[in-house]
Length: 78
Image (tube, rainbow, N blue to C red; front, top):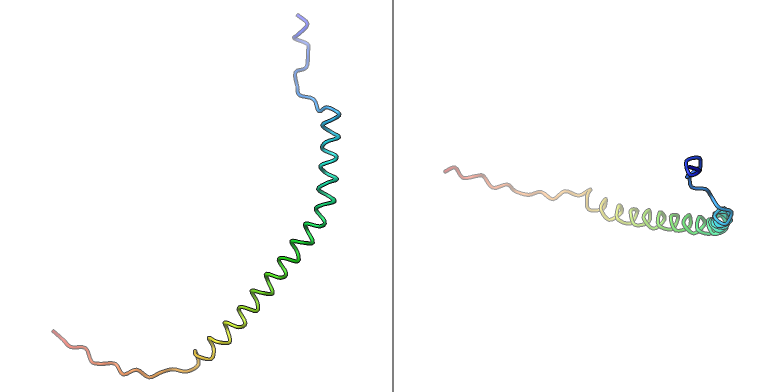
């Protein structure tokens, strides 16, 4: 009856800790480059979107200021 006293919880092996440490170091090393790349991409996309909005706003305001008179025909009653 010695099996009842045995602890059956999963244990973290030494090689698992080494692998986790390597993954953390790799993510930290690559993470800086990925963060810089994402930041530059977001900056470029924001600048492109702002430029597109500025060009669209200029063309819309030129036409939006002028109104064209339209004669409305009277409606016929049945």
